[in-house]
Length: 391
Image (tube, rainbow, N blue to C red; front, side, top):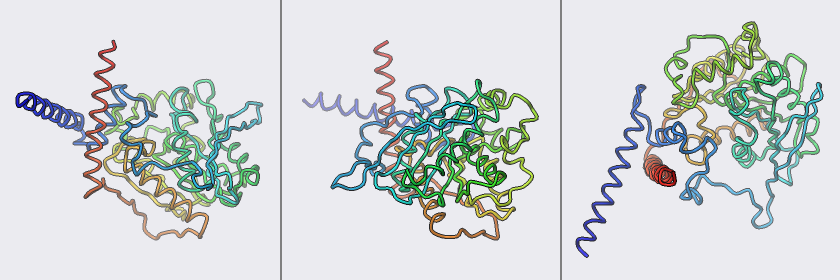
């Protein structure tokens, strides 16, 4: 028995040592040492152990991050509906809607998914969980717009689909239980670009009125701008590469003159005045970080109220990992607070432009993040070993 316990002890220590060494190795990059949770998730995605929309391990089933969409106790129920928008050229754009069944005069959040404007890189399906969570957190009617993408559809198709999606949501506000006076556009990455572009279109085309815009790590220019973040984090390890960005530009905007158009590159616009108040979230390890923050500064200079937050220690797309990352949870909380402010009070313009920095969790939150990182690492190593065994 003593010998068995000794072997169990040595085996346990060996497993723990393997986990620690693995996480430390994954966290070591040319750009510095990553937080454990960020390192584990990047390793998993970059090595195709899990997909971008993977289901978290069972240990997160009763995690405080999890929320319920049910109607326990007879409360309101979050429902999912599918509609279609017929565009001016006769195409039917799919719409994904999340709302509470008792919604009445609720804010409307028109959401544009990320995906580099390219087929196979993002869709309504890959962003279902995020849109559902936004509806739960904000109480808003969330309308996801499945805009057309390259290479089959070049500019301005995606932008026009996004704008038509905005108009559809406003025109159907009453039937959805929403308020056409409290419409906010939102999106991540390429979708963040479309949210900014749609805001400009609405301004330039005299409506619909937009109460606010939420931009998660947006692409703001197709120009070859020498941003430090583009050069430092463009390898693809941080979930977005220069290769993908160039592929997106070649496919979506094949003519160089398109790159300066404000409806592809809102950062190149002649005027930033009279645009809706903005919440812009950026990530430390993201090639799009600097251009998102510069766009925020341009808005501020034009008198637009803007709240800019840089999340430290995380990568492009971090909000989509809200089920396993505290920073993703904080991003959703910032979004919910922004939606509440935009629908309850007149936003104020700060005199001085500032980028708020949100550090990695500390104290017990940090301990929990570390423990979860190693738990996920064990899950990933086990899955990888099982896949190898099956082969």
